[in-house]
Length: 236
Image 1 (cartoon, helix red, strand yellow):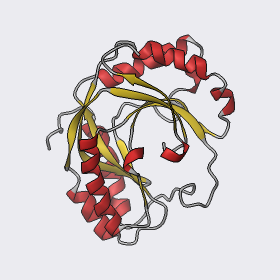
Image 2 (image 1 turned 135 degrees about the horizontal axis):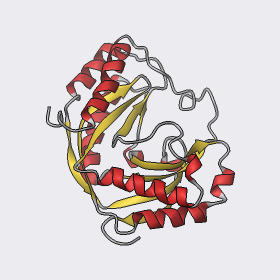
Image 3 (image 1 turned 30 degrees about the vertical axis):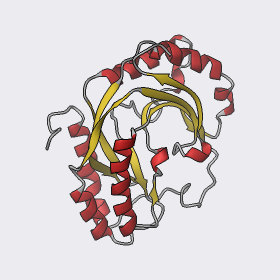
Image 4 (image 1 turned 120 degrees about the horizontal axis):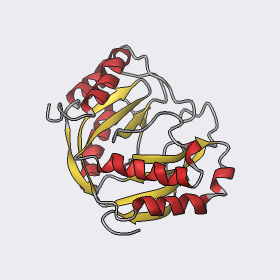
């Protein structure tokens, strides 16, 4: 495998080894918000990267194949695919006190992204958890994690660090592509598709912009508002 020696390989492989047996027997975790079983008023604030057009086209082809086998699942629209650099605060129904401090969040983000370089990521293969399928991203260097650490430092400096890393400390560079909203219709066929895509090459991209967004849990276009776009490689 091309990226077997990359530090993230073991991370993604651990997810896959844990999820693959469950998916094979249809033991998926259904997202109750996407299924309509629960209302979703969660909102957050995040810095994200978007895949460029060439990568998005390759991802669209994979999602179209998945739709043929499992049309009832939630397949991310191409416009919604993203890599999370950092959630400045995790999406919550108690979002208004955070949004009241957008000016401070913006100032910290401005400082963190000043002179930040472009980020090169190879999108290769898929991994999964019981609730989702993800496209694996392999950054070419430590630039992405260095950007995350600078943003953490700036947020801590202005007293906003208590909202960071509440679920886990993000280090990966994946794109979530599929979430489950119903039991698998064809678990065997779906797993066969995932097996074939395990090392599929979706392209390598140099990403030259980062977006600060007010968002819902899924970064859906309907509920995501662009606050500022930062050019990577020059001052904000």
